[in-house]
Length: 440
Image (cartoon, rainbow, N blue to C red; front, side):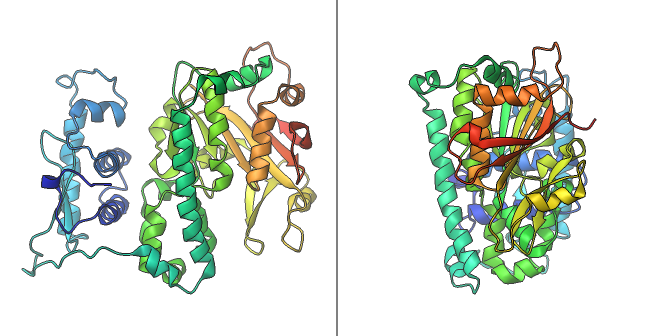
């Protein structure tokens, strides 16, 4: 995967090194206090590093970063030029101070907003910069002492292949697949509120590496830390950083890893979207933004520890997920119910789940102009079963009957907790434990 065209990159630089540099700069005090500059910087760097863009025009940035219409008049609206000027100054300040020993620097040329990554010729003291060595993260990590880490890296490679395969299937969906989906009116009513024709639907995969990092450190990363990358600065000197080693924690930051439980839902979600003539956009949690969460419909997969974008909606949900470090497992907690019920949803002493659980919440998006569907569970079997439940007319009718009856043609907002039989094979194997109107 090239960084950019040959004239724009130095021979000693690599994509991974440049991505780490972007993470460091984005998490620095020069950018992480301004959401607009932070978002603009990450967007521009992603276009170059992940999509090999050589030219990025002002109108594209205005539309994709600042929410302007695709054909807005750049002569009358100078928002991109103003922010680009501020961004250049902040980048220069970073490399003159905190980043003065960075061997690679970033420039954003005038007239073309595609960042250039170039080797710094001379340090402030006049010393030449050595060539950047290309690391071998997988070899270093596999020589580590922790067998869990070796498993984690191997699993990551598998998940990357899985997601790429699913993306290929989504792009190549055939008409015959679409026709085979259920056509029950209540199923269409439910999903037509999520996959609408008037706005995009974002499917946001959880960040398994983030969850792993929090399990190692015991520190829960809030959305603000995740969005501005400030948690990145704490990794190298943390207990987790020591355990993983430099190559290990760099891989943890850079890799896009989602849990199998959530990745396995993508194909069925894509099928349902196709029936409703909607093409969902797939996002990794680290690449999502507040702008999209306000403007679009969204399906958020995971829980707030692995997908921090769920955090803004937790105030409306009484059922949330708690992590048991001793069992290395998540379980649901109903803050509106009897505290004694927590034991019913917990793990048995041998670490095996008494039963599988999943939660589903349908809520307004951050601006109230769209809908957000949140699906969480104790594992792949639970989240897969609850998605089958949501695609089954009889099961969905049972869920609807437990909600207040309204004259609205739209499926009402709700939160629900489901219990799933460990060997679930049919939607009726999924039982409704709790179904209520979300907290206002």
